[in-house]
Structures are given as C-alpha cells and as structure tokens.
Length: 115
Image 1 (tube, helix red, strand yellow):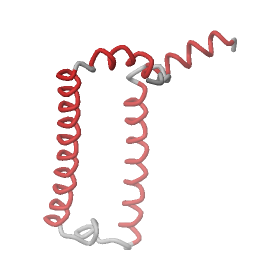
Image 2: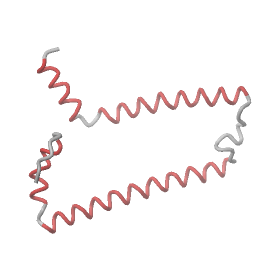
Image 3: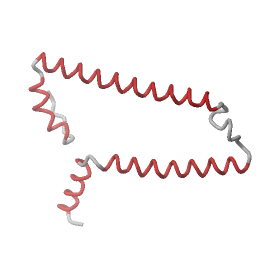
Image 4: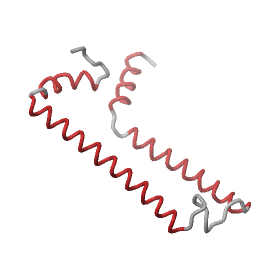
C-alpha cells in the first residue's frame, strides 16, 4: 500500500465516529455469547444453582445490586456533564473561549500547542 493510501486510511480511522461504537457492539456480542456458554456449562455441571447464580443472591438481591450499579453510573454521567457545563460557562464568562476555540482544531488533530 502506498504512503498516501495509508495516510488516508489512518486519517479516516482516527476521525470517524462510527468505528468505536461498531467495535463495541461486536465485542458485546462476542463477550455475551461466551458468557452464555459458560453459564450453560456451569449449570449443566451443577457448579451453580439457577436460583442463586448471581453472587449467591436471590433474584431480588441481584436486582438490587444491579439497580445500585445503574444508579451509580447515571450519577457519574450527570456529575461529569454538569462539570463540563460549568467549565464551558466559566470559559464563556471569562472570555477564554476564543483561546479555547482557536486551539481546539490543533488539539483534535493530536497536536497540543504550548501556551
């Protein structure tokens, strides 16, 4: 492959937004199928019980643990995006948004200019 083709492919892969979710879906498919096979094997060999398979908890306990995990993830997302909105607000009020916007293109392309 010629250098210009490699450059075009590398640039496309670095700047495309659909590749990461696509590979995440493929990875999810692979991991879930492996997990289901392991679960079936553990049930057949009798190493786990189908009623208390998740951390040795009942169905209500497992749901409670999973609800807690989901709640913590959502709280983290709200905190992160709230902090991002506050940072953007501070940039807008202080007038530093011009400096930020002028350097944003360089940062996206992998080059961080020294201020």
